[in-house]
Length: 119
Image (cartoon, rainbow, N blue to C red):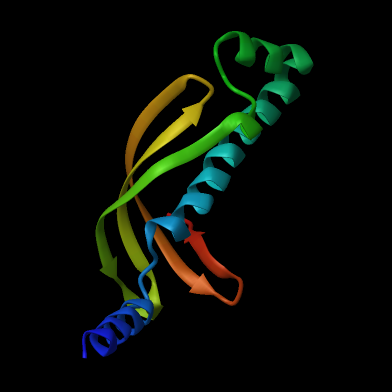
């Protein structure tokens, strides 16, 4: 009987619809890396490669060196059209540097998986 209960609980959890931390982590990592790439592109447009070198001299990491870890969903709320609003806490890690962030995002699940929605 315990085995049947476990299967039912696992099935219901899988059907809950809300994303979990593992679904959100790669979305955040892509977003943070894209933001840094956009900043580097703007600096490159203004000052050429020396603009990007200046950013790096000021401590900006290479976008590929950024990782998101320890994603925690603090609050999850279902909205219209199966969109979810998530309050998150996570670590941005670049080399030996670690910064804890808290933010709220909106996500929904499409044919290719979860995606962040614009503000």
